[in-house]
Image (cartoon, one colour):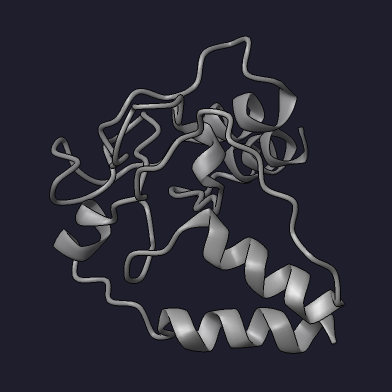
Length: 142
């Protein structure tokens, strides 16, 4: 809910653009959905406070075409993700760093990737690779 507060404050201050950094939790990542990109379906209103708040958090302006820039008066999702990674990569890094073993189950789960096609199309490239990012996570937990 803090994100909405920041977005309202930015609008009240007359800012033209509010950049909101969010989470892949805004996307429908049901089992068998596959990869998600900026045009993928977002979570429904019943998804919980965190993903719904992130989904609804802000509007930016700049372009009528989301392929070339943020859409005026609308929320334009832009994913920033480096190379392919799985949730397992992250969980194994974290559990190894804190000295515990992960517990896995065989329930159906989302197995797609978060795609960053729009950000790449706007000229963004990751400054940190996956291995370096996971190492930073692990170092921060030790």
